[in-house]
Image (cartoon, rainbow, N blue to C red; front, side, top):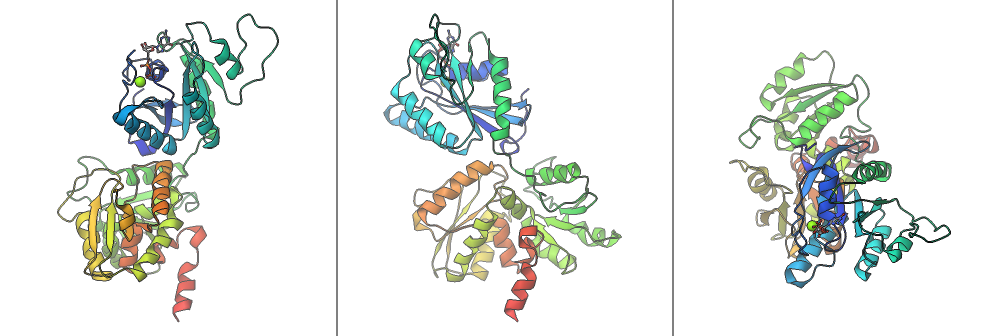
Length: 421
Ligand SMILES: Nc1nc2c(ncn2[C@@H]2O[C@H](COP(=O)(O)OP(=O)(O)O)[C@@H](O)[C@H]2O)c(=O)[nH]1
Ligand SMILES: [Mg+2]
């Protein structure tokens, strides 16, 4: 099944190995159709290809084809770097190695890398239609043909597949499904916040930047999570919020807004109504809320002409009042310093070190692991980082209110108030 859902909803399983190991053929065998380019010419897979399937234990899971880890030349090294990136952000890996050829040093290095990266992985011995190389058999704990005695089993599952005919693909799929328990599974956005029967009020601005005919990822994921937890959900635009709110018999457990509408929403609901934003929910879901909160400290000691990268993870339509290129810069100049230099970027810039702060988007299209890999880069560069939602909350005077709904921050508002008094 080829599911057209955005990447972040699903885990990613990356297929790695040396050139010509049979990685692309393996993916085709797993899907039972040609999704990846197969060629006898080494170095054919230049850009990782991603396709999804539904696997027990994983739900929709994206398979990522990669270029060989032993690729060389200038372009080749770029491809290797991309593969490394994919490896850093994946949930699990399949190590593809040709069963008919002896192990080579690049494979030993890659295997060591997989062993130490802490992610679940398994070994797929491709070319199962050809005789198994004795050395490879020994390396992966398989009995050599004709050899006597037993061999110690390899630490992770080892499966043989014929990438051309697809023989062994079903067993491989089952083994990959079984990796799910050890895989990293993100909690739902309402984890720890929702109890059965709770009512959530979602504010979803439908402006020019909204995609045609559908809701955006954080909205759909939150609605689904609320329904899964047997909660009620009401969704309104900011214009209907005032009347909708007053039509309820009881106050909602939580109001969740697009952070762009924070000020209007806060003005339309009582001061003691729990309120947060989708981007704050998602920062928490991806395990980075604490890091983004401490990034806000940079605002109090921000250099007069400091530099800020406003970083988006995906391309979206930029409306006239775009959050990244208009709203955040406007608020920044009003609330922090009018002479700051803000740049909107989509990739981590080469001169990251030269910036004083990164304001990152909600990362709703990124997996927790790929956000983590990005956060590592910011840390390594010594650049503080926060996100859109927390910056907007701060700029609108809604902190700590916007984090108080989470059990780990319960009572922060009272604490902050008593400190002020
Ligand atoms: N006999 C046999 N050939 C295979 C198998 N898997 C891949 N090949 C061939 O090996 C070559 C490289 O395969 P490919 O999947 O492109 O390798 P990649 O570079 O790792 O993606 C192609 O000619 C494939 O047809 C297999 O299981 N058996
Ligand atoms: Mg390939």
